Amino acid sequence: MARRIVLAACLAVLASVAVTQSAQSGLTTKLMNADGKPIGTVTLTQTPHGVLVEIDASGLKPGEHGLHFHETGRCDPETGFKSAGGHFAPAGRQHGYLDEKGYHAGDMPNQFVAQDGRLRAHVFNPNVTLSGGKAALRDADGSALVIHSGADDYRSQPSGDSGDRIACAVIR
Image (cartoon, rainbow, N blue to C red; front, side):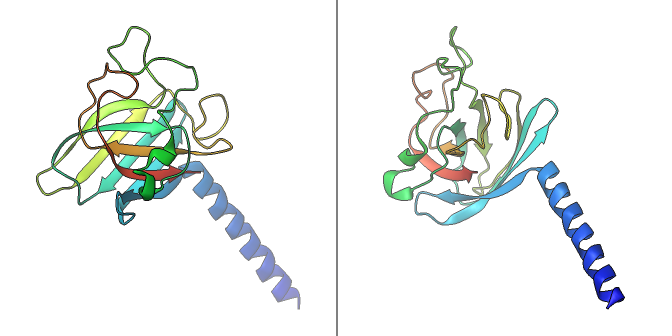
């Protein structure tokens, strides 16, 4: 009986350590295409200075694509991912690195998909957090990471003229 209690206590400690390590390392979520099929993963890691975004995806059109955090944690392919709302902009700024009144907290640099349709990227966003504060991605309704069909021009309102939403990942 004493061994069972000790074993149960040890397992509880190990589970607690695993949960803590997982919480510290961030979150990994599925990235889906416009048909609702999984095409890769997005891993978000909170750092002392912002959020590190790691993307590993395939099946995308080669070329330059806009990348943004959007304001709502819903990725409904039936709506062309419009369910994700607009760009994540808790400070109410304009869109784009080149706009005098910009940029959104969710704005990130364009990403390049290779000729084989693969996107492997590491992007750092110093303007958001995973949780806590006004720019938290994991707020009451979550947020989403969206890949657009074209390049962001870093200027046009409200979304950089980056085209349709072709991939989406829910952040909760």
